[in-house]
Length: 340
Image (tube, rainbow, N blue to C red; front, side, top):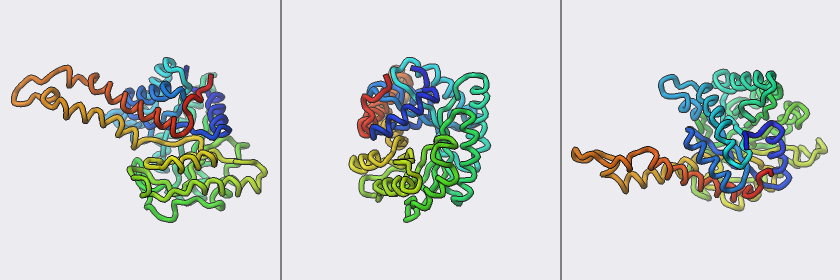
């Protein structure tokens, strides 16, 4: 199937909300990790979201120029071609973009999609993320309002992060403390600034103790039940049940019960990066250790071309990451939910 149209993406999110499941949003940094993600979704018979962070886009742009926009555009164009071979719907998304990178990343990408839509085409990406969590909430929401208006012109959904997620993601760092919990007052101000869909659809990355990075279960105090308080707090005033489409950031090490509660309370998208990075790299490390004298020309020998050929260990990496994506689909109840 082709990359999801705006209409299909909205239908995907609606079905996830109604069915209380979520789509894994898989960060990719190459055509190979893209194929791994696509394969994982296809094997799980789940639609999904593939995303590119600012750091990933810079890497994709090549180390000679490190241009984020060209890197993101190139991979998105590639995805539009190869995704047709996979029997699932895929939405393309850009991950965390802080204020100092908006002009070099999200705004140019929005402009590209606006031009495409004006010409009768679909947007290049289906959603973009504005990470204003390092800013004061007033400024965060003012920028979000401006970006939402631009996103609507491109038939794109905006994701906003209104309060901090702990740990570090592409250079954006927050301490792990009591500020990692969004309040009803925070979402009230969000609804006042952005509306509840009447000014354009947005995904909301609220904080309930989330932390980016590698953490064992129990090391992070997640409170996914907080999402119910946020939903009900706004529903009581707006009359709209479950008004928010939530995003789960920093999910590495989360327990099955924490994920279940998050899904019940309106999470429709959960980001995965750390776990899939490891799943991609681990088979490569195993291959290199097991074939040390083949991948290296030890003591002047010639090595073994079949073992250092990137296709050999690359296939193992793709399979490892694809398997982790299928597990994520199962964890998020998305297995077998693809649109027919």
